[in-house]
Amino acid sequence: MINVLSDKLKSYRIINISLAGVILCIFLYSGIFSYKSNNFPIHSFHENVTGKTSISSGLSRSFSAIVRLDFKLARSFNNNGIPLFVFFVIQFFLRCFFYFFSTKGFYELNQIVTIDVIISVSLFIFYFRPFIIDSFRF
View 1 (cartoon, rainbow, N blue to C red):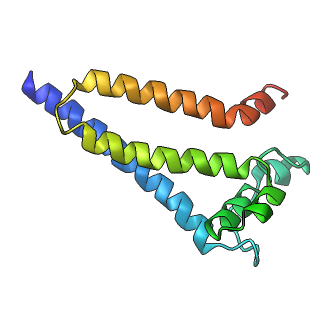
View 2 (cartoon, rainbow, N blue to C red):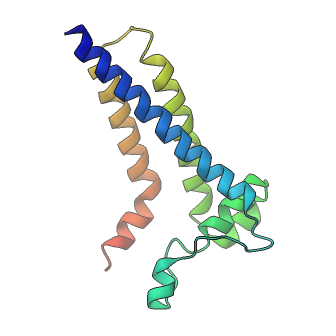
């Protein structure tokens, strides 16, 4: 029984570390590639295939402007950039919080995971709702 819990705890912690790492990579990508030089290696697949602008168009440039604290320009690239960036910042801190909180033993792991899932799904739906709504238009 203890080994199973220990394995679940290790898995949960690995998931949190992995997600925090992915989010850090998003921030690094935004910092390394600049909206000024427009040298982003990843381009919109949707726009390349359809030739139409998508709801996510300009997000890389928007994130790049945000990490440089140019919020007005970030909004001009994509209105959804700042809210999505806020989502990723919140998620980064939640991953760190739940990683450390899961080792303290105040609550059972199932309770922690349930709270984590409820918070994360709620935040995802709130911040990604324009994209969710847009996906139903296709």
